[in-house]
Image 1 (cartoon, rainbow, N blue to C red):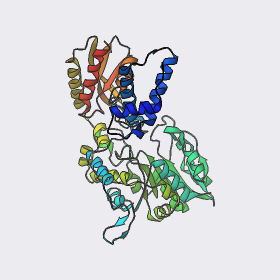
Image 2 (cartoon, rainbow, N blue to C red):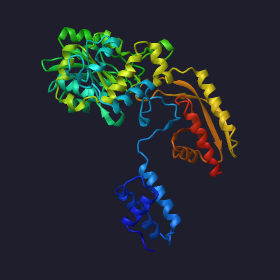
Image 3 (spheres, helix red, strand yellow):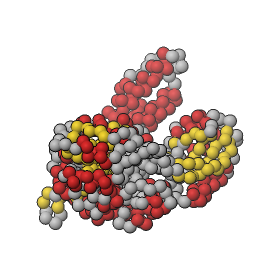
Image 4 (cartoon, one colour):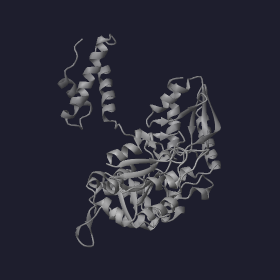
Length: 455
């Protein structure tokens, strides 16, 4: 059997897809040739039939043209799922991103003065309005916010942190290592479970530059514990002439305790306590695009803005568009909860989730799939994204019963277009409804229809 040459395969690709220039098919032609060679060496094909070659070309080109980054359906019940892109954006935020992406914008142009302006002005006023902060800087994520703040305020000087707050978040991002690369000297105080105000006070010296408090947003220490309140640390900072910084991690603007959920310190409360610098993420509890937000006293924010690192860590125009649109909803909490998907998902009443699960169960049962049964069960969700680690969110899911293994069903759904990401509990695949959008339900139904081909 003769393996077709690349230029011959390019001609066949062009015949099937004439809207592309022939030069576009070089790489897919190489892939087709490699597949044929491997199958021939394994003895899987002996003759290259035209129909087989045509189908292979179509299959390879479809894969070649399919983006790696794609939409998936989150049926896990985890709201801020880091592996699935964290916070889905509001409709308004998406509209603004598309508009700014399609056309030119006043990213760094002052329309009133007719001269160069600052990109940060687009979210400056609204963040001040919502939080009461004196000054604002936004960078590309919270890790960057922490890095540039430490580098600016404490380069080659000591930063005091409680041992119980030397946290690690996803991707092995650790506070001690960030401090090292920021050029700071870590001074640990207290113990893992107990740190007192005197622990901070006793180690302050002429080389101390900053008092840092890190919110334990992705874990909690319970039992025999003690930690210094932020108000106490602020008072110590004032007495010693040292700035106090708080890394909130998953910062939020909404007091969840008003909705009978666990209390999480809000950005507004932390600033009101007198903290000089507070940093947090834009794409977690805030519900916007990935960003690192730095708020606080003008004297410190201005120094951070002038740090050369700011050029490398600055926020781009699409993120600014999405962030501004998200922040505008926070002018009224009711609007924020109604329009920002993360807030809406976290605060969806349990009974409404049950109705959604019941709707999905009925639709799946109407398919009359042989050997499939569906049952509504109660589940417990997590917020995810390193936020509210001990908060349990009661929910409902559709459990799948079949002679097919749960692993096979999960893989089958994951390989659907769009992929449906589920979880397995007690040897059952669960489709949790908390994070499903209205348009996800028809896609799930269509995916289950495909099981008729394997039963």
